[in-house]
Amino acid sequence: MDKGYEKERFQSLGIKSSVAKKFKKYCRSISKSQSMTLLLMLDFFEKNGLSPEDDLKPNLKATENLFKKRINALIAIIKDIEKTQTKPTLAMLQSLFEVAEPKKKPLILEKKYFKEKLNNDTQEN
Image 1 (tube, helix red, strand yellow):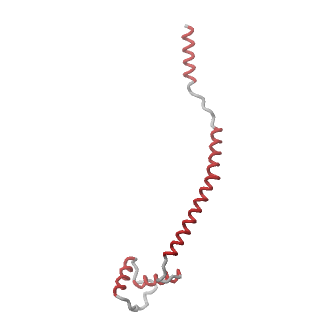
Image 2 (cartoon, rainbow, N blue to C red):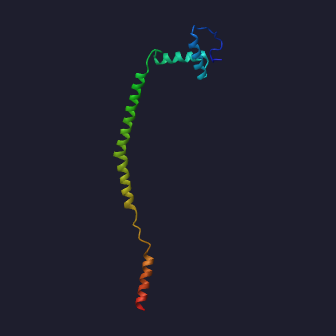
């Protein structure tokens, strides 16, 4: 039963049989009763100020183009932020960390010292 419409009586409409079959098939595909499907359709047309005879393609194309323009503008803004803020800040931080790192002395000193001592000992003998 349709909620809110349980106590209302049914009324018949004059519809061609081929149209009725197509409508019933559509109602099953969206899992709604015939009354609720028709009510939803009427609400949609009234809410959007449309007529079933209107062609939506030009309106959809215009909306699609508007979205594309806005997305392209956002991409441009993000690229500008990256160029003017992110990359320079990253470069400054990297230069700070490079300066702050202590220079590592080679740990080979022990080997050098050991080799020098061996050389000195062999030269003395």
